[in-house]
Length: 197
Image 1 (cartoon, rainbow, N blue to C red):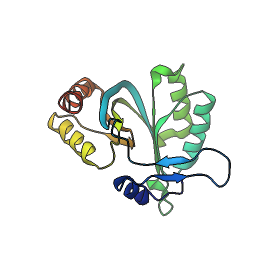
Image 2: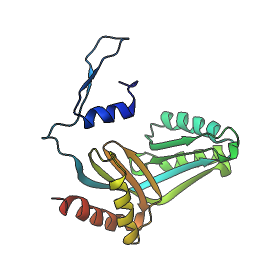
Image 3: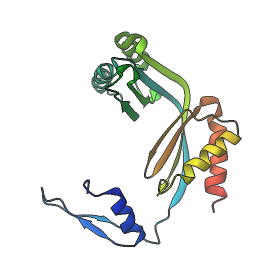
């Protein structure tokens, strides 16, 4: 169902119309797009965190070349990356950038791997090591921007700076200073889980 227009899908859900889409290229079951049935719980179901993460940032005129090399190297070293974001600016390659998250506790020999990345990319790579990840998990979190807006306001009001955001249909992840992660989890759990009951 990759070819379905996002607005058409949203309209169908709001009007309670089911769309049955099947690939014309291969056999298989259809994709069914419809509004969630009443028994499916929507909203935030859990607040989770990961304390020890590293955000790797590449920038400068060689961004894409360095990123492609890093991706291959990390695959060889069996290093899983997440929250990947790559921006290529044709008009001004100095504005190109890439970033991703690594969980070093799950990587054998991370220091050696980080050193190799630094050797290859020089001054065009940085490692943010003082961050943690806070994630809100649930169904339909991004039907509007309301949950994200309220979460940012909540964190700001508790003197917690957000340094990165990534979203999917079932998750909102925010990068938080490591020393504030426990407080972040506590205030978000209170607002979105306890007070929402």
